[in-house]
Image 1 (cartoon, rainbow, N blue to C red):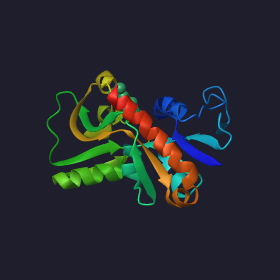
Image 2: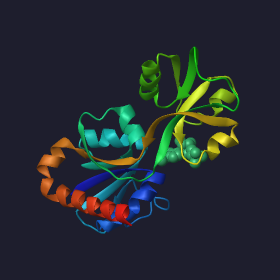
Image 3: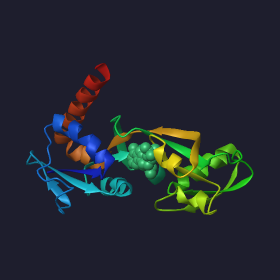
Image 4: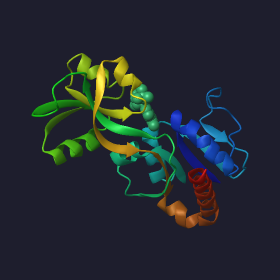
Length: 211
Ligand code: AMP
């Protein structure tokens, strides 16, 4: 049995066609079912649909053999115990700093609200900016509006969320896409099952790039 951990939400939606190309179609719809383990059209493959930040943990401990997670989550978590063989090119967005529209440029000693504590810390340290990082678990956009922070570090896709809250994107930290990660022991022990899946994903990605 192969267990694949997939981040809930947009990543799951974007991963479905890729999985389908590999013959993996979930039998239940996670939006309608409360099941945490989804059986699939392949008897030997099951999916666990979990919070994005939990995907590397499941894969690292071998609770899932493979996972699909955003690079943002992998950067923050650290991925030393995982293989990251494929950039799936899905759920693309940018990790950026953002501040209230018209606020002065980010400089001096600042407070930054984010859920990406380590990534933000190392980003501002590299720039020589003294940043106090305030960990939040969601609604980062609120922080500058109520003077909790001067700026935020968050994912930006269309920019609509920032705009709706009077914020603007400032500096690009890095481009983000979802990656396939594989547990190191599974890669060895279940190579015969995992390698064909990796090959199929690669073929699909090639076809997408060529079309
Ligand atoms: P947008 O308004 O389109 O710029 O989207 C920004 C909001 O969606 C923020 O709350 C982000 O945290 C979230 N978001 C955008 N892209 C992604 C992604 N690829 N994966 C997860 N969350 C995302």
